[in-house]
Length: 233
Image (cartoon, helix red, strand yellow):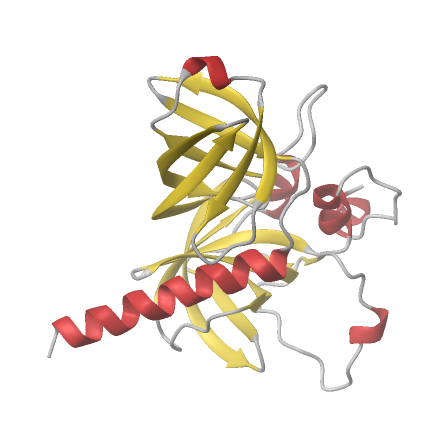
C-alpha cells in the first residue's frame, strides 16, 4: 500500500500542479538524494513538484526531482552556500534543513530531522472541491494594476505562479478582469478573486512558468545579497 504511494502510477491529471506531483520521485531512504552519473533527463517528465526554499536573503522557488525521508534534490535558479541553514516548504509543511551539495543548477538539502513520508504524501491528497495552491513567495515591490481605464499603483505582498496578493485596491474590483505589470515581469492578465481590508487576491488567467518566476526571484535575491554585502563593508 505504502509502496504505491511512493511510486504513483502515471495519471492524466488536470492542471500542472498535479502533474508535477506525479512526476516527483519519493524514496524511503534517509539519505539525501543525489544526481545519477548517467543522465536520465530525456526521460524525465517536463513538470516536477514545485516547492519553496527560505533563506536569510529571501524566498525562492525550487523544482523538486527527488524526495527521501532525509532530504531532497531540486532544481534551483540561484544557488545557496554549502552548509547554509535553510527552510523547505513542501506539501504545506515547513522543514528546517541544511544545504549539503550543489551541482550544475541542482541542490541537495538535508532535513534537520527525518520526515514521515506518509504524512508528507497525505498532506498532498486533494480534498473534494479543493486544489492545492502553488507556493507563495513573500516579496516587497510595486506593481501597476489596470482595470478598464483605471490604474492602481499597488504594493505586492506575495506572488506565486498562480497569482498574487496586492494592496491597496477597491472592493468593487472583485470579479473584474485586470492586467498586472510588475517590475521586470511581462504584463499578466488575471481576475480579482477576493478582497479584504483594501487587500486583494489576483488569480492569473495563465499561470507563470516556473522558469520565469524563478529567474525573477533569483535576480531580486542577487540584488539583495549585493546590497547586504555593500552595507556590511
